[in-house]
Length: 50
Image 1 (tube, rainbow, N blue to C red):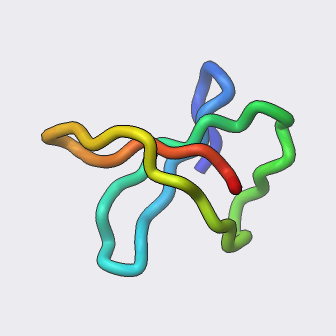
Image 2: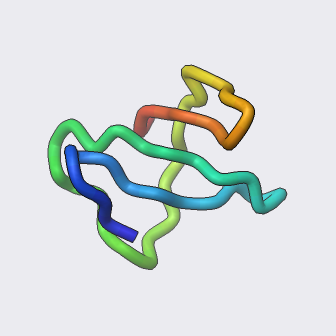
């Protein structure tokens, strides 16, 4: 779902949490997007849209 600070939250195919930086505001709830993982934390992953 949509989060504050231009981030969206999602899941990978293996149900890991991913925090996605939405630089252009183009991400929408319910859509599949390809992302590049840029950081791994103990609580999940962070990425950018490709």
